[in-house]
Image 1 (cartoon, rainbow, N blue to C red):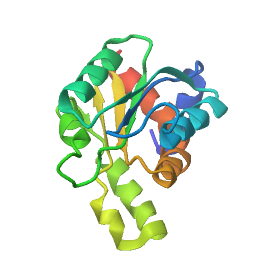
Image 2: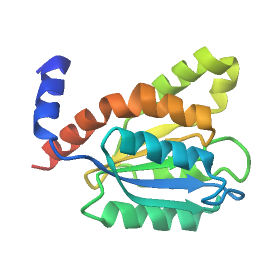
Image 3: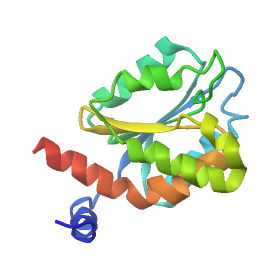
Image 4: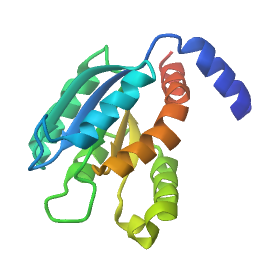
Length: 174
């Protein structure tokens, strides 16, 4: 089956809205100051997706791990998106924490994100470690925490492909 047939079946079979768990990873943001988390949730809601969880945790492996465990254990959650903690500073531990959960990786997500970022910010895009993978029938996506990075990832990659990704994952489980 070609990609066009996949999209046709995905849009027919994934009729209900996809349910998301959203996590902002930051040592400084609060729900009042988390512009990126708000943008992410707004884009999801404006595309008729549900946000089941929205939380903020520190750049701490245990806090990130606890959120991921809660989200992937919830049968109402289809997808997890983390934003923040994807850089290369010592405090940035999101990627190391999230990758442990992956049963399958979606290498193309990070590759395309960095390609699109390069068009906007140039060679600084090499420092992004955006990634995605599959765990227990859910997709986990980790993106940088800047508002522009969130908009880029959501509008150019996640929103256009999420129904297809969820369809493929659910199809594997059957």
